[in-house]
Image (cartoon, rainbow, N blue to C red; front, side):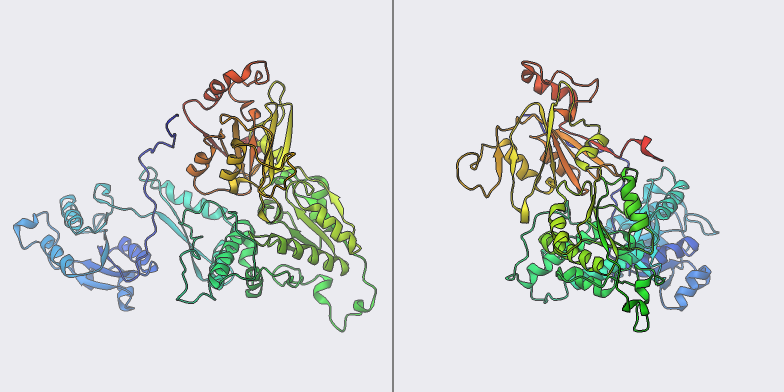
Length: 622
């Protein structure tokens, strides 16, 4: 068996960390404006700050003097001037610093800033001695403009504010070029932050509140180990991992764990602006997962000039017979706004009074909806899909009864695993047979964006589309192997290991046995382990990622990339490599199976998998 193939580390980067400095001390040696900048950053990280400077208060820049007067920092006078004398000589400022470090407990970081300018500019030899005594005491050091005496460096950082209140939030972005573009790094940071939605800071505040509410019912005596599993550094690969359906016998910890999973779903799928405008009532309803709908008229999402917002006892329109509303069941395509059909675009921009969107519809599509139209995102979270589905159908009917035009927005094509049939039947029963507007299915569009033909002469004569997960999370029966067929599996990446096991494993019961098959399985021959497979994440979007390998190695490939990017799908079959290199057209020739391993090696080279990021740049502007 081939040895594992993982990305080779390439030096020159930094380990990007964020430190909690509460009740810790940051010691800053210097008194200029750079020292003030370092002090401010440390204070915002809840660190205590000590300024060590020759001359004490008299040497401070204006900002440090003001912070000292406000009691924000402590200033210590370093009486002996900087020197290059070795500490072994005795009586030097280096000796004094060594003694100070020995008796001052809790110093977490040391920043040396007086190496830049000023009449008492520190020499390189003196900086080296400071570095050595700090190293002996295991205290990390940053020395300005002397990277050889730095254990850590500062990124070019931006802390975001809440646009609505002006309050500084906990969201920070830091950028570093690791010394390769010190002037450029500030510009890069500015362009990154400018490209983010202006409400991103407010969204973080609201999600933080949502997290607190999700855990509010847990007592200190309860086990919180699993409740906090969705931390940003937890290594959790996807917010779509399977969970049991909700039941009435859940403990408080189990309920809190489920609510935290729902918080991760909201964070992943709701538009930033929608997160930033959540009210506490909406937060409670998200966490309750109940079938009760929220009020359709929301001050944060509806235009106050609309007729619905002006209803009152004095509004004569209430006495008239309301006009009959309608429901449009619409497919949004795979994600790229250019793939919206003209009918869908018209429905969203000209006819919609209310848009009820699935969570997978990307923000780029939702952004074309006029701001006066209310947009609601389905709360179809893991373990709560049926509740969320029922809620959306009830809200649609209620709004249509009020005379509104409701656009039920589904990802891809609404009838390809979009539960459209359930909604059509429900809406018909309530007197609102919907108009169904097809969309470009991701089952076809995403492989095309990934450079994979689902059919190709000499490679794949047919294709089949199936789901990787059945109703209420049950396993489904997957098709068996046919060499000339491409298998497209939607909604199965979170269960990748299980799906691969079924495709490679022995045949299951339920295929002509007369025995009820409740565990899924496979209907037909097993797949060869060398069969090509591609996982396509966020197909057609700018951050599309394609992970291509063989069935035997794809689980390791997915684990190697870390965090997943839902929605994802699988394409399995020889069409995956059909356009690689010079192209393949001999897969279906007689005896071609004998060359399969060599064919895969030509495709992957010396690697076990290949990863491709982004879409063709030619799509820019389309």
